[in-house]
Amino acid sequence: MSPTAWGTGMWSCDVERCDKPSVRTDGACILCNRHLCATHVDDPYHKCPNWEDAELWCPAASEAEKREVTTLFNKIIVTALLSRASHLRKGVPCSLAKDLKYDPSTRGSVMGGQNIHVEIQFEDGILWLARIRRVNAMSPPLDLRRYILLSEAATLQFLSSETKIPVPRIFDYQFDEGNPIGVGYIIYEKIPGKPLNWPSATTEQKHKIIDQLADIYIELRSRPFDLLGSLDQPGTSHIGPLAGETHTDYKADGQMRPLGPFTNLNDFLRASIEFTLDLIRRGERYASRPIDAFLIHRFLLDSIPALIRQIQPRGTNSNSQLHSKCYLTHADSKGDHVLTDPNHAIAAMIDWEWAHTAPASLAFNSPVMLLPVADFYDGVTQIGEDEEFFAQVLQDKGHPDLAEIVRKGRVLHFFVFCCGYPGDWEGYLGLFGGLRRALDSGGDGELEWEAWREKMLIVYKEDAILRELMAR
Image 1 (cartoon, helix red, strand yellow):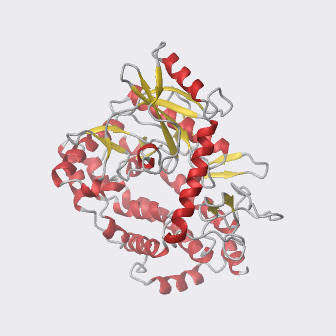
Image 2 (cartoon, rainbow, N blue to C red):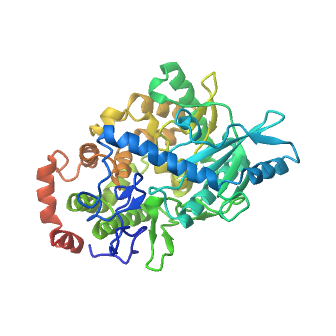
Image 3 (spheres, rainbow, N blue to C red):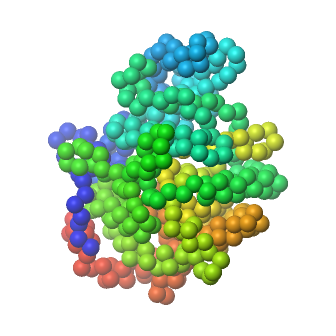
């Protein structure tokens, strides 16, 4: 594979006189708020403690978060926010439910990894939330933050107006930080409920949630799209490029270059993996293991045809219309995207940033929260008990083709997780071993990592990117 004509990096290194691109994720230090290249991300150039050293890292991270949140709160023009909210409700007075002050004891209820929520309380008891994007070294550039916010607003509007899926209703949004409130925001209703904690739920509670999730899948099935991408025009069903950091590059002139939209799964996977391979070549991904990461992703690229053959529907009962369209899917279905009421019913589906449309085999695979975590990361190729129950519920509701997608979905879960996997190396090897076994890759599925690695170094020895990496 020859190097492709991608961009020059999302961020450049913040070290003086260094023009190399910053390593994505690993090169973003929230403690010193800098972006660092593969050369400068570690000692002796970078002295911040590593997250693995909890004794040093935790207090430093707490102080950094306090600085970040305080800076963001100082940008918010509270009087303008309250005036806007009151205007939207035809003059009903309102106030902030809590002062804008960083409070570590309540952080879990007002902020996540990407956003902060400011609660607005009206005199008649109605509660709204202003969803505001956090800004730190882990955040994408401003234009991409705007696009992600735009897509989330478009997605929520589509779901609330075109489906029966419970989501917060949007009342207002602004993406330009030059607006009177001082920050970009989405204002929507606050729906009472608690984020779902799947591991702590009882079997009865899980089955109740799964039954409702099946209804949501069936509802999403009824709203097909022609393209794979993200909703990007609020009030319409227009599909544009994918809204997310992992699928966005930047040209030499600083212009944002998101991937998509696509017409099929093959083109999407191929473009995504080729992009990751170029990031590896440029030093923006897997800077500590570039050759290993290259071998894995080069193998993934070559394995796309085998993957698609495995997940294609079989038999005469499969709905060809289902597999010729794309469907909206949540991009972070680990469980806390579901709000539940006191009766353990789904109150709302939240956090739709990064949502996109995808072919049925991807959109209707089991939610991540149903995966048996230990088995999955150990590379076990069979689906878990919760997934099988989910498939049976879909089948009992008259959708055997959706049930088939779930039952055949493990190989696709492995594949998607392996594409750009950001976690620990041992976990990565477990997933990748499971993928190789699920694909039955020419008898190589049972090879241990080192044996497989040596074989692939020979297979790909003429690849231009590999030769460039090995020459460094």
